[in-house]
Length: 372
Image 1 (cartoon, rainbow, N blue to C red):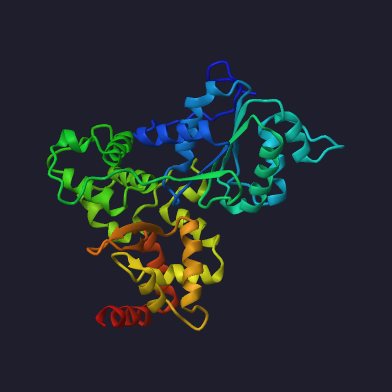
Image 2: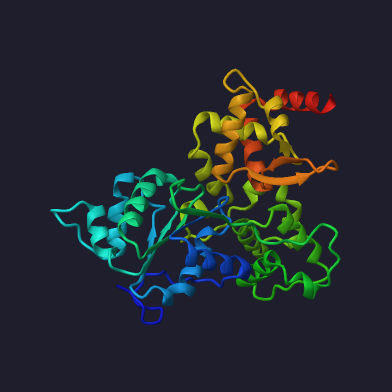
């Protein structure tokens, strides 16, 4: 049992890099943990769910007198072993006369503790069952989970982790003000770690902003782009981001495999989809500036997907953090939902669409819809 943070028992891993920004997000998640017993952080791959959860757990460790426990699930492939993974994190042995869940209930039942389950998406059903059983039996236990989709169980509060804030395209801020944006600060910090004399200058500021905008403020993509400064200038990096999947492939050797390249991160999410979800995901890449449900239902149809299927499948893709929903009001004050993909996700989906040979057919239907 490690007790490296204060005197409260915990097994939180010590971060090896600095945590940049996210003050508002930290405050909000900490507030939620005081009011909800299950908080799930969701969001696109690479958006920083794990790092945010760890930072929050480190800051609230004193609030849980009986311990804060971190359970990493990414490497686990068998859903039957989720409970055992928690037991292992707690340094508890399985009891021959009890199920793993019963052993965990016995441990947590009288304890005021925080349990963090990281990367639940590929084991979502097993995690949901475990969390339900624990929360029903252990009234002083709080659970913070991360995953690319919610568990969808009673009592869960879902909080979507946003991308880092980036300057707008017409932002003419001086260098000092640009460095107040979390995305810019992260790029500078990570670039400096691989090239010690790197600085934000008047000459490279526009390119740094373009890089952060092009990857939609996704922290993992920013870090991978920053790692390229040991080989390319920031201007060259910005110019090559049209092929982001190829360029952003210089992750840390010790990072989880799904975070070593941008493509690996996208592959992880893509492979969790069923075939119809994959098909719609690919088709939606035809929309460059976002889309409405009506547009998706008109364009993304096939012999296997009709208009009604589009709504159901779109709901799944939103739930799995591959499509984002935003509300926009028209001049008549009627509200119509619009949807979009973060640009690196759309790039990946468009690449997958090209591999199927369906791109031209989709573009033709897209043109027909908007030409009417």
